[in-house]
Length: 226
Image (cartoon, rainbow, N blue to C red):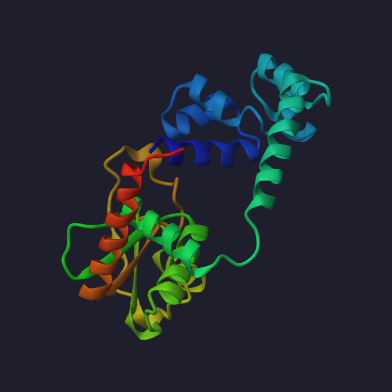
């Protein structure tokens, strides 16, 4: 949940929201909101709109190219960019198998016996898992089903179109949108405007294979390193 709150806070800050307004909207402390968005610079126009003189002063100081915040932002960005270059090109089937099985181990639904279910709100992760299911697991296009989980006040049809394009699963293979009220409070209902997407595959053998890969990965913990 903290990840969802952080993402929403960063989105609102990029729109010019004040720390106080962000903390009220997503129902978190000002300290948390400030920590999550401190590396996001505001435009001069956005700064003028801030309610607090103190916050305007901090935002102006943060815009200075030699401010500690600006310096550390550059350092973090350079580290991130360098690390991103370490992971490039097309992955081998083995790497894709390990990554996909690992993600399913962490995020997939494992209690069932014959249904593969993987849910997430990150489009990049959904794309990666679809690549895993297609290339490594050999799942034919006709076996995929999609389910969108979203709050009732949001646009379910728009979400279905988005996730269909993201996953490559045709809309005709989607189940009905699953609407659900938030149990975390009304301030958190808009953190996922396109909801969460669930990939569904009815295949007992595939689920057994993925569980086997997870068991094999678990045995790595027993290996002695040098």
